[in-house]
Length: 144
Image (cartoon, rainbow, N blue to C red; front, side, top):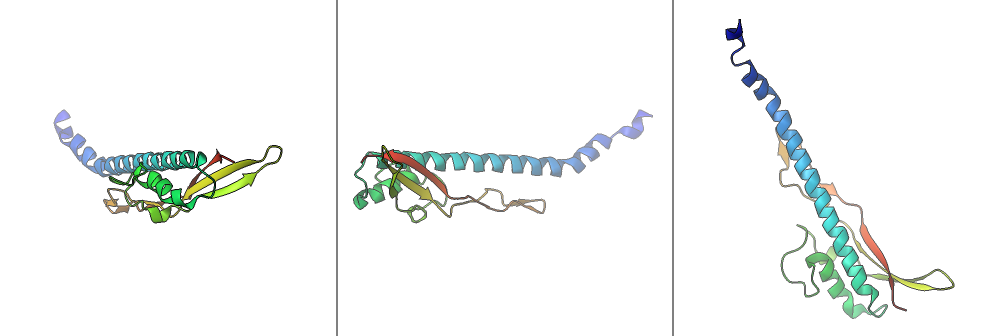
């Protein structure tokens, strides 16, 4: 009786393997997308923190702030923090006076138009596609 069962497990495994691989790829790419989003959020916060101690409206520091977002350093050297990220995607910082009694000065910097590109674009006929992030911004209280 047991002789008829030889090879059934390997056939079942061969049928289920593509589904398991697709689930693995999707999970891995989703994790990478979340990790990359977290990196972008942190870099925008760092740039907003840098701008918060600068003179409001000083346009000479804008390139430095954009370099902080894209490269993680004010000099703009090295590789980008996220594949495909460029300084053109970083809007100029916006300074605003908000509130009353006391009025505070805030600065906002934003990444717009960034698209996450997965390492594996398709597997077994399933297309993973790109993920376009909503604008990522950070606002901090600045100097008056």
